[in-house]
Image (cartoon, rainbow, N blue to C red; front, side, top):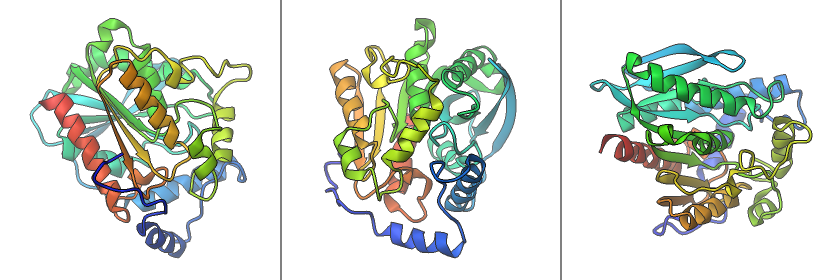
Length: 320
């Protein structure tokens, strides 16, 4: 935990203002447990576009496609004002593998690009349950392989890459890193993982304490895992539960967690296992924050601090 900041044990006051503004905007929560999936997806898009506010300008943003395992996949690249070739951080959006998109995270990624000075790549991976595991991992691996070959033609230095993401995207970033062959791992300079889902388990202390009444619920997490994993899938396999994988040889890792999040212990336990494996690891637990807090820096000052922490890590790993 951030040593200088004591835990709040209650939501940050900014959440009250945010709730008022969300109500004024006529927005409702996205909950695939109680809503048709198409309704939940639309609500998530509207909610996170509202949270993001006015996007910062970035010097160059463009969409491209690459050949994925099921056909062409969309990749959006944010290139800040800087000399090329730029190192690149691939960022995988959260949403339990079923919600959200590269659009919901657009404002966040614009800021990360500008603040870090590196290129940010955002993958439009296939959503569950229409596409279940390991489709998304296969798409991320195809992207990494394609980027190593074609990235220089896009003004990217693919000898300097970071994998990053939030929630399900943090899971995808970590499992992708673990799946890379040795020749590709040498190009991987760091991992930046925010409030990730790292094993399909619901009996941790944080699930018991924050599994209801703090935004993301344990019930919703069960729904996400059940609709992401195919029937009969071994849930203890390292590619499913990377918390229990062989973590030795991973690059320096930044873990961000929210104090009031049912997934907090996923990050705390992963930090312990990374340290035991000899991986340089930084863990920051943000007091008073709930899941997905990175998306609301305008209302939550700690989110602003967390975004800067990620940007500084990217800058250190890729530009130092």
